[in-house]
Length: 203
Image 1 (spheres, rainbow, N blue to C red):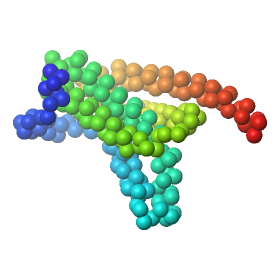
Image 2 (cartoon, helix red, strand yellow; image 1 turned 90 degrees about the vertical axis):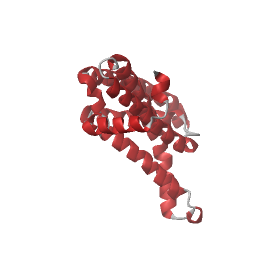
Image 3 (cartoon, one colour; image 1 turned 30 degrees about the vertical axis):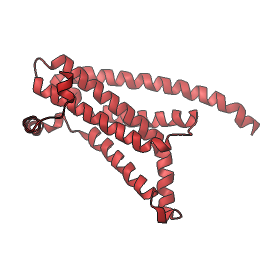
Image 4 (tube, rainbow, N blue to C red; image 1 turned 180 degrees about the vertical axis):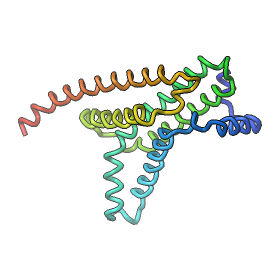
């Protein structure tokens, strides 16, 4: 079954998918997908601007480079959560409900693969700007990533959470994961603060 799900769909499969998704697009395309994909496209635009060879000294190019350097670790972590979380939920839906709703769950699984691919592409585009960051930068990036994801879960709530009316369960799990990640983040903040305090004192 997994091979069939990952294999390129035929014309009939595509027609069935389009018909099914158009019948209830809210279950497949929500604000989280649109906003996160828009951020990836924004990174593409920034990278293209920063790569202009004849504008290295341009203020616009310099601003694009600075913004990319600031956003890269934050967006990479957002995309990592986004891709892994989407794929995990798609797999849970497939395993749990395939017998009752084979078409919907298979489309949802392919959607999860698509979300994972978008995340991987975004991280790949950012890879050259993810090197050289210290622990402090990554802990800060993790905080911003968690802030973005918390807003998505609590305010926008991805529509596929409610597939087969399991919204309460999935929302609870997502909030638990975010809470645990925040606890780890706070612990790391304390560790980083203690590590930096002596060096600041010497400076």
